[in-house]
Image (cartoon, rainbow, N blue to C red; front, side):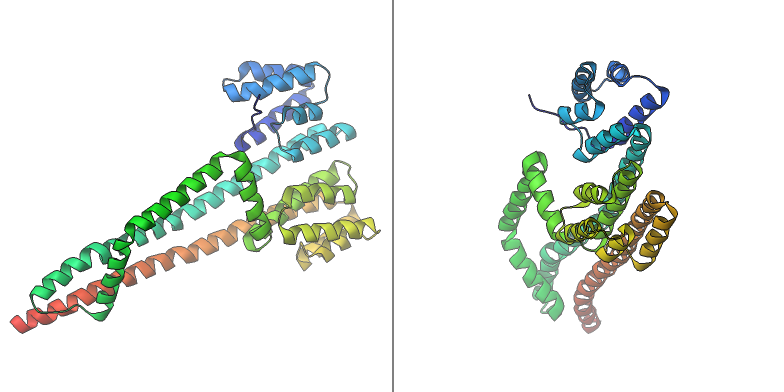
Length: 348
């Protein structure tokens, strides 16, 4: 039977539900049965049935989550660690905040990208319409009147003619690309391979790299607070934010330095994951015993800075698209209007 994955948007809700069950002292098996009875979505009921069956047989929560195959490995590992250390309530609350933050960041990124992509599509459509449909009409009218358009407009019109001739081929290529993207999006195995390739190639740079560091700091905070050693915390956190070559190299170097007996704060500073100011905070936190709280604070600040960088980038792209579109349209209109004005003045 095909195992269903829990949608990302439901993870923080489910973690919150589990947190409330644990906080109120309701046995997990009984609480999951309550959730199943109130659930109306058939897919959710499917994996809740599996969880109920496993926990009613005496299986620990982490093992039941892992057995269902519906939850991220990071969540199951953290719940397993929490059960061993007796910090299940704290970890579930941290997981809820963690997945809430991931969803909020993903939504902000999608919203930030949608506007410039839409503007760019409109710009391309306007320019293509002008050079393939509008300019040829003016060119025929001017030819009948014995006048030629400007060199810029003529060049654009010729480029538009080439584009129109290649329209069928371009449409076929676009359809093939769209179909391939749809297949990759719908087939989990292909989607995971593409995501892995993209993360390895680009996930450690710029904004994506900063977001990976944010996930690493958040994971480290939860792992350290749950009682894991620093070496184990780095190894576990690297699984979540890993995949990019640059990030993997830095986390692996950090783990090796700690394994060789180095100071955790020094190892994190040496890895290059954090700025000099953040490294000073980590060293101070290590001395005062507040490392988990400091890592969580760094995670939030890294996330906020990532979103600010996205906003700045989008804020620069949108005016650029508007200016380029306006300039192209203005050049085309001037190339058409100047000969027309010259013709009218001659007639006058």
